[in-house]
Image (cartoon, rainbow, N blue to C red):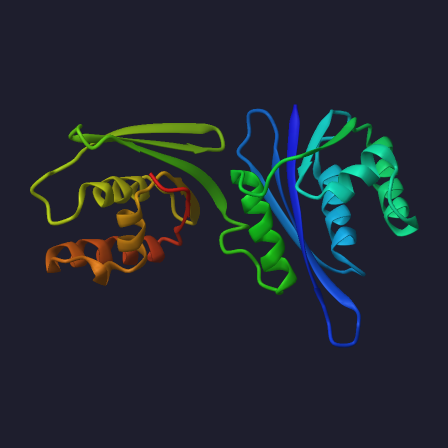
Length: 246
């Protein structure tokens, strides 16, 4: 089953017109999540939200069922039950016509914005509305999961990119100037390929803070190690984003 998580952002301009952005995360079996975004002129937020649904239908595989998740109840009512005013009704019919034309069996349901992929769609939409491309959107992407238990002297780093899964067991050095959680993060970054965007889950707050600002490290040796890793990643075109806290 294919799944799309969609969201939109909208802002009224001084002349009374509106500018919006849409974002979506598309998940298809056997593939990493794909992220898309776009900017549009829109009369209100609901119109921008329906555009996100329309783009999900356009981007999903033809001839296959699609579940679209949104946190907008008006969009769900318009697409699923034909409710709403004339403007919403026209946009909802455009969505359904597109689905029929592509052979997509469409179901629209509710998911809160706090869910991982919904939050990603939200950020994509906000960036698009502001006219800023989301960093790393057009790069190849890898998902990274860091699993670390305080009582154990090692961490498990799992990386998944298109066509490949990598698992590394990282022995943590308790005598190192670099905190153990940051050691695990550095091991994860070392697995990246040139030009790759890493989406890291469950990195600790300490590891995130030290990666973003190595000068926060208490010891000079740790600062040097973290800064060197940051510089090496930047030279290789590797970008690191964080989701959730371990």
